[in-house]
Length: 233
Image 1: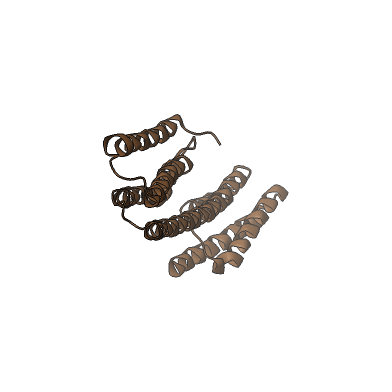
Image 2: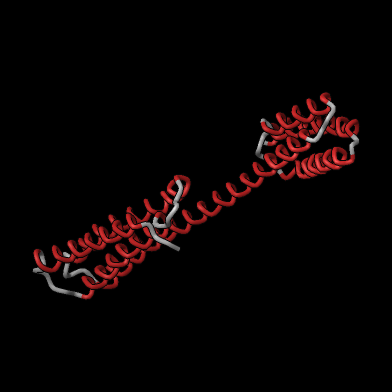
């Protein structure tokens, strides 16, 4: 998987931010004791920075990314950014309190991380579900467009103008047909696909009258399908 250069620069930016944080932490402010609670919180802050870099690269860092990918990845990246901010605040506060018990510090940090993991998993599940729904929708759109292309191709081989007109009308019906579907319509859609294939066989065999009759039938079935689509939405 190739990574877009601008997101590599973004990751470098986050890394630079981490280095600046360390500079402030250890050089400018470092007047407190390096207690176990300090190092415990420091490790979790480091994890937060690494998670932000990783999420940025994996969510947005692929070449050829589309606006849809940015939209679907937004909840995940936002969650990681919020976790980083919360962790910076909580972690720094704990580091500034040398008397803080390491067990208490660890429990606080684990709870914050657990909430973040829950949000990340929820975001990934939602993203996966949205992608599957989009894939199904694209398949349905392709199904309708493919049938329309077939009918248009059959019309080119027809000599009778009445039959050709009916076929072109069927193609237009398919063009403006509802691209979405429902499981309850699978048998009806299968019937429509079979009838259109039958129209093609009639055209190839020169049985244009039968092809016209099949077109009329399919147009009626298509109207029924579109009406049921509206009801089932």
